[in-house]
Image 1 (cartoon, rainbow, N blue to C red):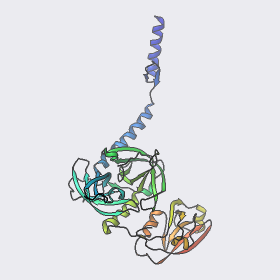
Image 2: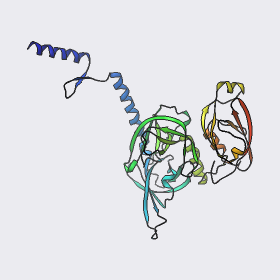
Image 3: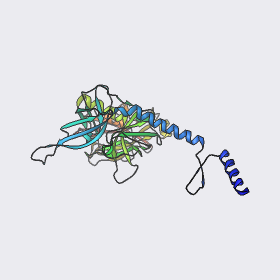
Image 4: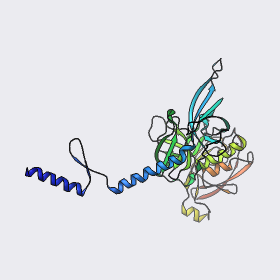
Length: 354
């Protein structure tokens, strides 16, 4: 009996000192410290608040089309994806590969209402497209954030409709920025966001959101057969492309034939050349026989200016490669090791390539 009292007293003392739970084998397990529980609760609240804010903006997209090999030309459901409302008058952003070839598009809002939609503009080279629905009642537009401010390790939340499961939420972190991925047209899409927030077929076109509920990316690709290798087009690119698609229905680009990524400039170079910028574009590839190759651009060069415009990132270069300079000679200012060079390149248009 004394041994039983000793055991009970010891257990009560331990319980007062530290909360425990009991396993099937009656082994005491120490509960997480209170501060850890508070952190987990704060994480959960952040995700919950983001879903409440952005979830109503996310739509399920069903695409119908005709198989060109079908002699009967019967319209069939060809696939599905995600998108999100970004204006109060019915414009929706999604992926190009979700809607390409569609003869009819239907969307389902977060409240379950179904409406028709039509393609406004399509840009396969960035895998972005804008569609529009005329049913504007109850639409909740999402807010864009600044993707240039993203940091590796930052919390992100993906919302979409993978495999038809509507309004699915996954969370992760920004694994890397400045990644490159080849689009279905063969063009290299630069400056992508890499995340480990789980994506599956059907997530394409859905928003990647930061902890403040701002869209910082458009989910675009997952490498099948891997885990945690998912990619999103940055919001700054999406905003620029969407504006052109709404205006013209397409994006006209100049082509110089380089692949690049954003990098910081060494402080000594910034001071030595009295530069007003701290970032540039590192050339990671030059296509043979391209304007860049003929102009003398090399792998490892750092592009810092395009004519009189500073280039601090791939988004800057993309903007400068659209517009009225197609066909004329432009000057690229580059840093090659410690030398500053000016190269003359004649950009041309190649079916929207850049």
